[in-house]
Length: 186
Image: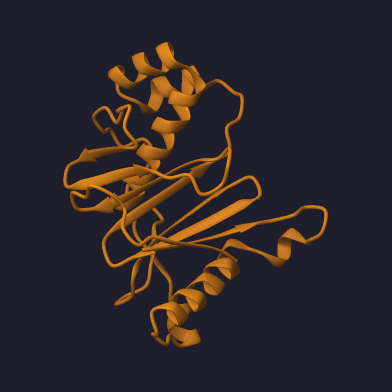
């Protein structure tokens, strides 16, 4: 599994230079170099979208993209995967939670606060991205005190690759730990 991320420095860089699509092409190139696979520019640009907008390339690794504020990330895996990253922010978290989380998860958020909200948000987003669904897809409670949760043949891991950012990966299969995840800044 390979995770590539980019942090845009607003003071030094023109943000239009780094569109999500251009960053994805750059990450695909880096991923292909790591796994010793060549991909043509035409094939790399032949990105398709499922009915909910999840991108994919036929006969290529599974991947999932996420971005928040000035951070962009993508994960590549041989297995079906989902990724979410979130910068914590203030807002109407309770109201949002009521719309997207289970009743049990909303009770956890009420008891534990903002950190529980973002932990649950990234877990749910990573899971539904793996499924190719949306954040409004109903799922059972995703709360555990552990850094992982199992749901319907997927393992959802909290990962900490940037300090202060909430992030989670959902990967097909029941895994005890994430092995051999390579994290690279681009």
